[in-house]
Figure 1 (cartoon, one colour):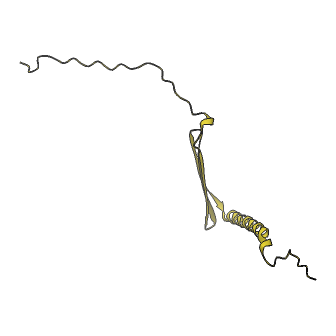
Figure 2 (tube, one colour):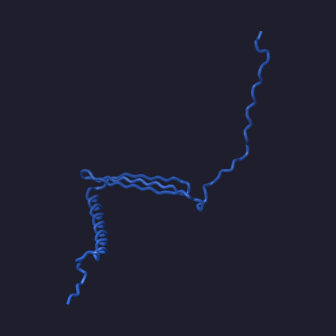
Figure 3 (cartoon, one colour):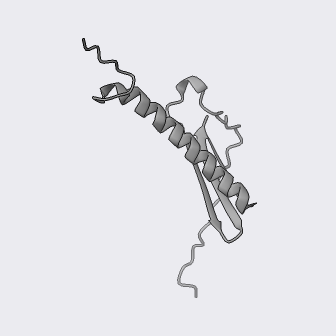
Length: 115
C-alpha cells in the first residue's frame, strides 16, 4: 500500500501578460544634466618611426561614444610637429614677456627725460 494515498495536482503554468509595454525614449535635451568629453593623444618616437595613439570618449544625449586609433609616421613628420609646437610655445611666451616688460626698471621703450 502506498504511504500517500492522495496525489498532489500538477501546478498550472503561470499566466503571461500579453499587454504591450511602452518603451521610453531618451531623455529630452533640455533635461540633460550630465555630459562629458575625454580625449588623449600620445606621440612617441623610437628609431626611424613615430607612433601616434589617440583615444576619445564622450557621453551626450544618454549615449556613450568611444573612438581609438593607432598609427605610424616617419621620423621627419614627428620632428616637424615638435619644432612647430616649440615655435608656438616660444611665440606665446614672447607675447607674455612683452606685455610684462613695462614692469622692468630698464626696459628699452621707456624714455628718461632729463634736463
